[in-house]
Image 1 (cartoon, helix red, strand yellow):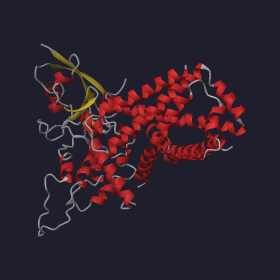
Image 2 (image 1 turned 180 degrees about the vertical axis):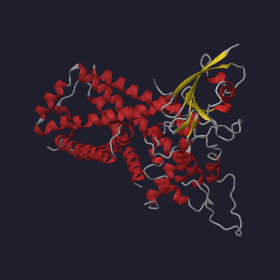
Image 3 (image 1 turned 60 degrees about the vertical axis):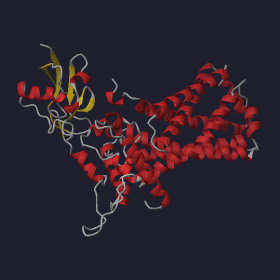
Image 4 (image 1 turned 120 degrees about the horizontal axis):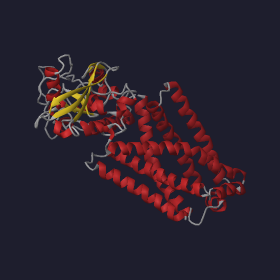
Length: 110
Length: 113
Length: 238
């Protein structure tokens, strides 16, 4: 049943992430006008509970979603054994979570 | 040579979705590392942002926006395909998704220059 | 006389192509050409066919790179400048020449649990099924399969993950799931939810593009994904 569960988690994370991605894309395209500065980014995010929640949720969802996707790619496009595939996917999950949450702290903590 | 069985829009849509997802997954740790430099203060993040002013980085940013919007529209298409009643307009949905991604890339291009 | 330049696969997986010249006719199918070669050029050529009218699903082969039912494929529609390249079906072991071994295909058909198990005995009254019941309509759209394995041969996922059940078996499972008289509907969902099951499908839709009888296995597989997801969320699948 693991295949069905991973599938469902993949789709639920996608559905939840879709509005976040739209907001992120609109944010990127608007923010790059006239160049980016650290003050501009941090002025928006630091000390903001809203952005802390937004980015934390985003990081957790993308970590889960990306892990399941990478696992499929490794199974279908590489000859690696299942054990190695799972280890690589888990490695990416942990790195994405640690680096992602660290970045969230970096831009929202003041 | 490409397998003839793959010469249809459904396969191209799959390939775009897979490659954009793979590209984003590889980029993401770097994105997080760059933003994480703010832990050491705004000056550190600024020195990174100054580096991104070079044309190659700007080009990469446009590509990344296209990858993200392509993966978004492709993903919404798949969710609709799997969870909504079947639409006979699969090719139309693929074209709309491709159009939106290219438009996002163009918007990024015009705002960057 | 106009001729066709035909390359035909000979031997097993380690074999190769052999060239034949066959007479070009205004109205002929790919199966006609293969039969002409077997009768007039090389009687040792092995291939499989039965009904010759698109009902039995025996004669599928790879023609110029695409899986096709050869008895209903006109040469004029597929031969570029009189050239034909005929191979056994892809994604299956080769027995000899143009005959693929369909055992894995039918084993998976069974593994997907697309069998009917009656919930009632013969003495019991019949269960009324209205033709416009949604389940009946969904099953109806999936039942005309002729087991030709064209979709299985066209499917990228079967090539990438050889244990994958594939479009035909899952399409059958979708019909079995929609048969409300079926006593093993939950078994169907369990069977299509394991590692080889419906969730491997990435909706390339090569199966639907190639199905000679116009079925849409991608739609059926999407239905199974919905049914299994619903059952998982309700706690019926563990």
